[in-house]
Length: 240
Image (tube, rainbow, N blue to C red; front, side, top):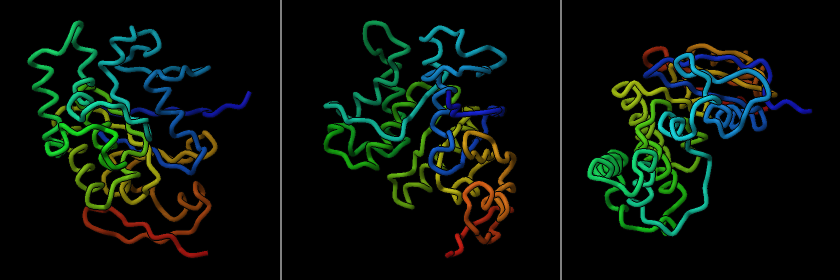
């Protein structure tokens, strides 16, 4: 049996942003899916406040975790109805006043007001990504899991999204776990970073773990780092 993850152990605190970095096939998506109980690990456990996620009722898990995959097939729904579906764990027969209020608030937060009555099939890849994140936020999760959430966004939208996620994490005490290939975004916005390679943690810690040595160990490329404000760094690959 091939193990996708080996000896992976980590902890994330409320209100913090954890970025998972690593090359393709390193286990980033698998780790997120194990956290969200989409996949069941053959060993070990995912604990929330000391309780095993695999032993929780499915309906309870859907209130704790908001999971956004890399991509999904657009349905013939409007943006508003899609975001409202994020409230499904909270209603039985249909959405109520509070559910509509939450959906409207999240749509405004994500800057989707002008798109709220358009169908998903009419949207660009970046717009679809924002809608998917809005739907997850409408769940009001205590843990938000995002698999490459900025991959289809332009630079301005990336910065805006990261600002929103960091603000929400702080204000709502949400644990936010982000899988990404963007080392620069991780360096600028992460509270904690985990670098994976071949299913194992190469290094973990604060943004300071992103240095020339760890980039070379994890990605096999040489890079140079430019110091910016507050000890953050911009990473530039060195042409080989």
